[in-house]
Length: 147
Ligand code: SF4
Ligand code: SF4
Image (cartoon, rainbow, N blue to C red; front, side, top):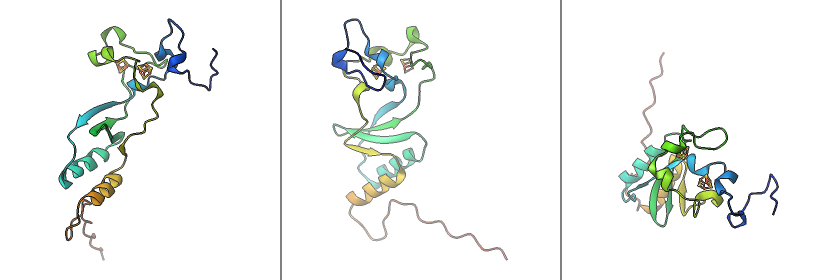
């Protein structure tokens, strides 16, 4: 079977001896994700806001586990999408297999937060309102007008 340049080879169409990674842009080398405690309080959500105030950070859930996701490319990924330290790559990379990697993933999750504002809206939706409570920081006082 031939695959045009614009068509992505499907995992099941690999020929014997072919490696799926040769058809991939090294998706698994362009982020890392760590499980985090499920946020349960407004303060926990305020921590999530803090994560997302940083560039390239997002938070997602999968099977009800919460993850901090950082979109950042490994320093050893080469321009041809190969590993520059293949013989010395970390154990986590060695143990990773193409069997159910994210080759076909379209990055959709149960929950996905990219901005602090999304976390604010979510927290405000799930916590009962109490007088004056808001996850949002209070507006700072206006600066004095210099005469
Ligand atoms: S393991 Fe999967 S996601 Fe990573 S480079 Fe290979 S095909 Fe791509
Ligand atoms: S060490 Fe190699 S395999 Fe591991 S993330 Fe970096 S480029 Fe990818």
